[in-house]
Image (cartoon, rainbow, N blue to C red; front, side):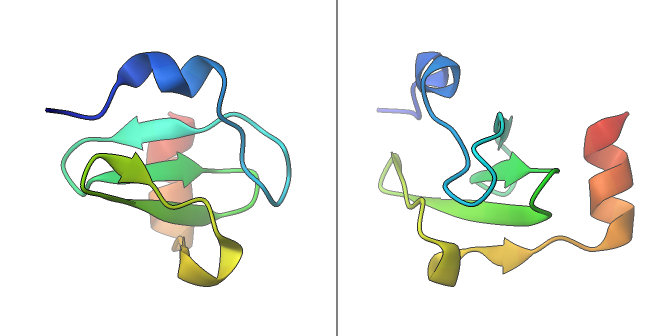
Length: 65
């Protein structure tokens, strides 16, 4: 089973309440507004701020494009 992309329509960043983008390569959900990447473990998004990693400025630029 793979991550259900339809979830992106209803999920929001818990920090900024903004939209999330799916990074299939790294199995993460990206919030460019909060500059955070949330892990997806066993096809389940872990939307906890303390579990997220900070995005570098280069990564933020990549996802804004």
